[in-house]
Amino acid sequence: MTDSVYTARSSVAKVAGVHRRATLADRWEVDFGVHGPVKQHFGLTDEPDLALPVDHLVAAAAA
Image (cartoon, rainbow, N blue to C red):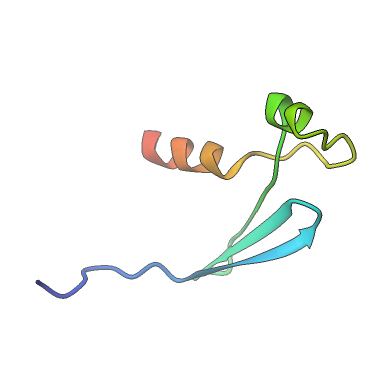
C-alpha cells in the first residue's frame, strides 16, 4: 500500500440539538443540521433549517 497523498483535517462540534459545526483545517466553518421532509419526519420542528451533511457532500462532488 502506498502512503497517503492527502489527509483531511477537520473537527465537528455540537452547537445545539442536531445543529453541528464543522471546522476545516483553514479554519473555515460549515454549519449543518436538518431541513424539509427529514425535519418533519423526525418531528424536529424546533430545530433551525440547516443543510444536511449529505447536501454538502453532493455540492462538493458537483464542484
